[in-house]
Amino acid sequence: MPEFATAEFILEDGEYICGWAIEKMSKSMFNVVNPDMICDTYGADTLRLYEMFLGPLEQSKPWDTKGIDGVNRFLKRVWRLFYDRDGFIVTDEKATPAELKTLHKLIGKVQTDIEAFSFNTAVSAFMIAVNDLTDLKCSKREILEPLAILLSPFAPHIAEELWEALGHKESITYAAFPEYVEAYTVENTCTYAVSFNGKTRFTVELPLDMSREDVDAHVRSLDQTAKYVAEGNIVKVIVVPGKIVNIVVK
Image (cartoon, rainbow, N blue to C red):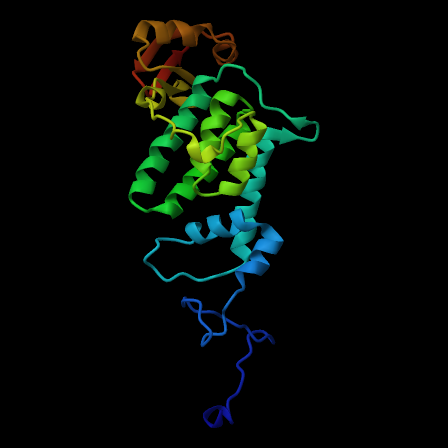
């Protein structure tokens, strides 16, 4: 164009840095991405999730293919909850309180976000929950069946395949939405910081309803307490419910 005939490139440390602006995808901006190419490379579920993860539906958002990799890795982590190198690993073992807590926090969050069309925050909640379940090494049907149902509106193809692997003949689209049970999400434990002469040495997880006397007795019985008391004598134990245990040693 004539107005750019004398334009000069400004280099930064000898390099031309090309930036980008937050614009809608359009031919005039030369930023159109063919969705078929994304589907061929990553699959339709990845594209679908990425579109929802970008941000609120009503806002313009930058389209950067670098972000797709993260969503694709998330779906692979979901798959690894069901499969490992030896094949299908889902068991009928009873779920632990920690696993049920993770699941029902997700159910409540996804249910609220779907009703509010806040799909990006729902996808974030899925990522957090799957990371937690991975850390817990969860492969239990009681957790993974509801997880597949929750995921099905967001990633229908992988959810359908996992549903079939779980032994179901009908499509996952006919499955009832998991019921949220608030009791599973209620915090019933707390972390006490255990200090000796005012200096914190370790922490311990105890029931919230544990009495001062029981907290005192439990902390005194710990091997870690014996280590820090050593040759000294416990003069006093101060318990602040739900927060701290301070042991005075002389």
